[in-house]
Length: 174
Ligand SMILES: CC(C)(COP(=O)(O)OP(=O)(O)OC[C@H]1O[C@@H](n2cnc3c(N)ncnc32)[C@H](O)[C@@H]1OP(=O)(O)O)[C@@H](O)C(=O)NCCC(=O)NCCS
Image (tube, rainbow, N blue to C red; front, top):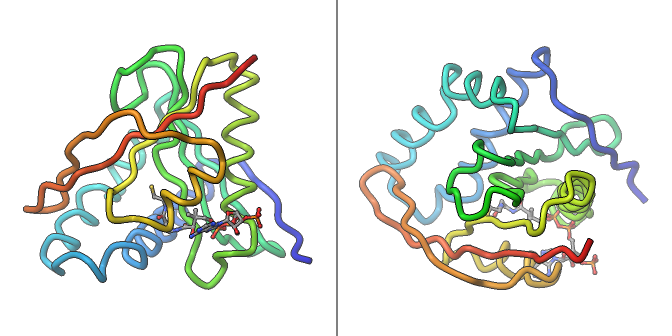
């Protein structure tokens, strides 16, 4: 068994957050997208300025999932106005949940998602929602397994490519 635990990310770990954000996004999507689109997206979405603004937003929280003290994955959640879409003010968005390839399948993702659900219950929101690329079958299966259901779609722009994200939600019975 692995010793997996969750740690809230503070300013001192900012560089580690930026590194794992870029690495996990590349591992997940580089195979299905052009290198131009990937480069453009990585430099814009995970720039130091952008991540600092996100980290300073009081409605956003970042967590690392650590296996034996090594950063294996991370979670970003948003509530209130920090949500990327204002579908419901009393909801929690899982904006990012990513585990490094070499650590996948060891329950880090599950523990990170459980953390998001625990926070959602503490905050007494009515549902958790997220957007996932329609071609990301692995993640869709993971969310379905955790009770999420599809409820809408939206367009996500990666570089010059307009892609369809499926919106999924988990209703919480308080
Ligand atoms: C999706 C992701 C977060 C899951 O994290 P993980 O650490 O690999 O998953 P876990 O080991 O915690 O698995 C949790 C459970 O989901 C199941 N599961 C994981 N991936 C699955 C899949 N592809 N199909 C079916 N079940 C799956 C596991 O079997 C496990 O079930 P169990 O509790 O009965 O054993 C991870 O694979 C990942 O980071 N993928 C790439 C990034 C990504 O796509 N993020 C989502 C963007 S929207």
